[in-house]
Image (cartoon, rainbow over all chains, first blue to last red):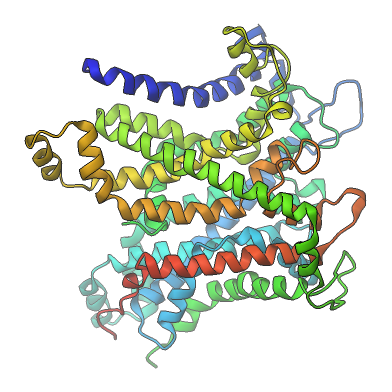
Length: 281
Length: 298
């Protein structure tokens, strides 16, 4: 480090410190009775006791205010996995067709996907609420799943199309010449060559399902279908919220673990989504 | 048959897009012409909701709030700080630089409810809350940050998430500048500031415009973090923004009054804006070039 670079490091450090401090607070909070700034008072693991049976208790009451943690974890996992699975299957089908087939309306479909991918789906909340009620999908995880998949689909199709474009035609031609049908060629020859694209869509879909908040808040009313985002929301600001930061931070950490793991192992994919997905190459 | 499997490939995703994306756009427009409430009756009222919007003093306040929110967050964080961070981190050793950038990605990948929770705790009123504790060393009195400075907190909360998008794109753009250019400028006697000002910034003009345009739309329609941190308060619509107002009208009115019609009219403004801007990106940022026809056809 040269002397004249010191102010730059200092600046970078100063603006990044709040982020580090916020996450340190979460961690310290979860293993202590009380926190003064970032200093723990009385280290303890009591906050994690709910892991035994999954019941989060409100001090001084016997009524069960919150759904069981393991039920919530299961719902969240189901939502995330289903969203990821549907997104990867649907987008690798459509992305392939748009990349490799020449047909009438191809460019309109692609233009549609491109225009919609930057369109904020969140503005359609009222209409989606209406449609879900019409289809009897209000207050079901399936309703949230379908909406997530539909709104993510334009971006996913675009990502997959980009990866399919990168597979050489010769490879596909030789598969077709050898007697594969288009479907077999797609499955046996092309898909193994776009593994990175598939991973990208799966990770993106999983994280987007795992973290979803607004659609769950709006389209789910029964506690039986709560996901982690609703549980953390209720523990912080909800109707029966009791402010026990220790337990709340323990729940929040559990919620964050898969996200951080994905983040550590899949940073290369995440960066690629940001860049490939957002129209800059 | 030539296109034997075409429908099989395309149908699932485009059916979903049709039913849960395109039709909702139309339904939003239609609901905005009714006074629909929770009974889902289609009572057509023409443009009444739009007339109400023009007269509604809350809508006017919310409109001003939205401009303040979008302009400040965008200029200070989503473009400003994003550019500063990417410029600094590409000019220092790569390992350190990418470490800092990874930290800045954390707020974006953290589930929104957890991230909001961290700010709610840090900004609490008591002396032992993080912000008051730190400022206490400098002799500041403890305050309830969300009540005293709601906009500061709203902008910081959104800004720390928003910075990473521009940061990633600017970093990628800066890294793709051929090092010959930078070396040539150095040989000609340019210092670091001059290299940034006269070589690097002009070369990342397009990414800069793209991030500005893209993030303007994102900020206009985003309200998740505001809902979680201030929920539009404290007090009378202090930090309520346009999209959040639409949400509150439809899903969280005090006293259980549900105004889907009026809420949809407010949403329609954003839908139309969103469609126009999406088309503009497509044209201006030459996305059309990515739509080249397949090279051969079997």
